[in-house]
Image (cartoon, rainbow, N blue to C red; front, side, top):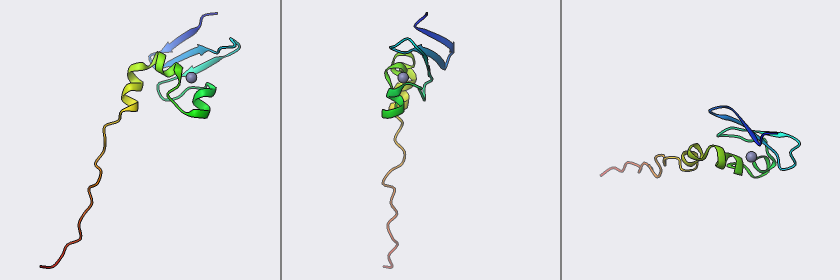
Length: 74
Ligand SMILES: [Zn+2]
């Protein structure tokens, strides 16, 4: 059996360590136990979607600390 199938640019089937099933891996999710219990990115995502994961882990910071000061009468 092949170790993985790339179904499309964003879906890859990766065989499990036990070779008894395939995991469905996409840039945002994976059906393996590692992703299920610990959250992504798992080793499959890092391997097959390295570039996508990089941008996912480093989102551009949004506006923060934009606190409005209460207006005061002079
Ligand atoms: Zn995985």
